[in-house]
Length: 195
Image 1 (spheres, rainbow, N blue to C red):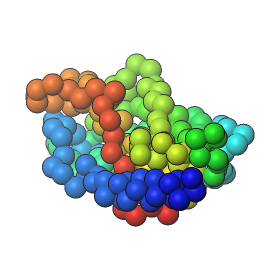
Image 2 (image 1 turned 180 degrees about the horizontal axis):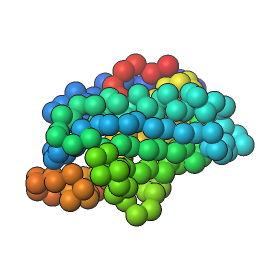
Image 3 (image 1 turned 120 degrees about the vertical axis):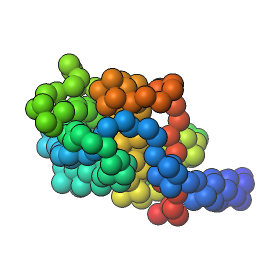
């Protein structure tokens, strides 16, 4: 039984390590978008009791990097400012496979402003609930990933979901491409070896 479990863990780790980030591919159409301010606040984030701990500064840095990596690729003609607040999180500790396999989750609220007009484009903040990628959730990410890797994966997924939200509102950025993305679409984890 133990040998089967070890083989399964090794296989899942290998599959996850082979995953490619969509940042390696050409960016989607974002119309006239160019990243202006990249603001992240996490000082009021609530931690689920069983979670590993991460400081507000660590969350802010992880999400700022993910937003820069995703939105810094766009070279449109207008500046847009992104503001994200971290509302809550759970970073999975190690658990018992199948019986108790905690999963990591992040809750954020996103907003976007037209910099030149100094106008917020969304009437209300967009709250987004995020899980790590499916590969880590089979056994629980606490078993196969360290805390920093969990945060990186969640931050990557957060920036991806914000991009998909923007795509579903093409009028904000004068996006003329065909069908906008939906928030239900799957996100892929950044492709690098697990901790």
